[in-house]
Length: 392
Image 1: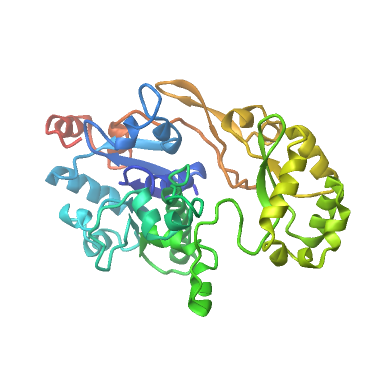
Image 2: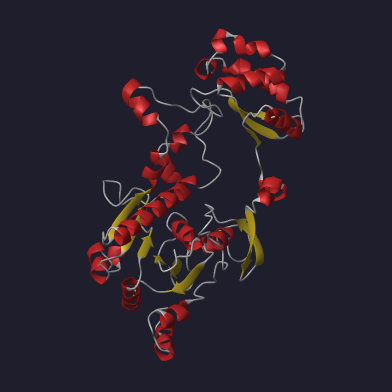
């Protein structure tokens, strides 16, 4: 994506992570931050100094400070917009307009600009004014209602999943808009990413099933409706594995491994859907068998009959896992403050045009002067005046 310039005005994750994905593949991403404190995610996390989230999501970006509440800051941003391809923002709807940056104004400055607005509830509708973070959007989008066990309250996922899913949809939207602009002469575009809609979009078949059958999916724990066995089991050494034997031939192979080949011939266990009606018995049988084996023994046995399975990996296991090592799924990045840090590698893997990490997450405002001089052509005297005025 060399030659594509992105202005990242976002904060936290949903907007900035989309910019990170583009930066991993060569886009020039300029992170525009408020002078003094910058993106709040810089201070969020367990590490001393820059937050761990920032160290990962800020990699490959340039950081400049700009007070967008000031006329001077808005003028500088306007000049950057004129020579940029994409603007990403995830402030509450109306914030850009309060800075004098309405859609019409942005496209007057640059008719080819791709404007991406990310918000919890979207740019339109009666809830558009509401503030939202990951968990709020997950509740509105239906994920929280489904997550957990039937006899317990809803449970959040272990990650800020809605933020990251929204960023993925955002990145896809930006790439599509760039394609239409460049390959189809489509001009500029405005992308409206509502976080709740992003998680709603991946709720499997719940909407259609409710529409046609009136059936509302409820929390069902670790099982998947209509598919069994597809579950997690504890091994003799206190680890957990997940196995999937929903295909009939896989179920037959599993029955053979457990020493109960006759189960595969029972009429009421003939298909995955029918097996889903006898989950408690199958959970007990499979759990008892897995519980006699160590994790390595269970994986080896299941792999011997080509049955889909995996250890339920914790991060420390990932560091030592030979597959992670062979694919270099964990890389080292030089952080300007903390030194070498391990991070997830760039994905997806492109054979001919692979992404890479060429710099760690910058300190706040590290590239302000360079952006002003290299891109906008400002002189040292003009840059000094902006510093003195508190614009940068």
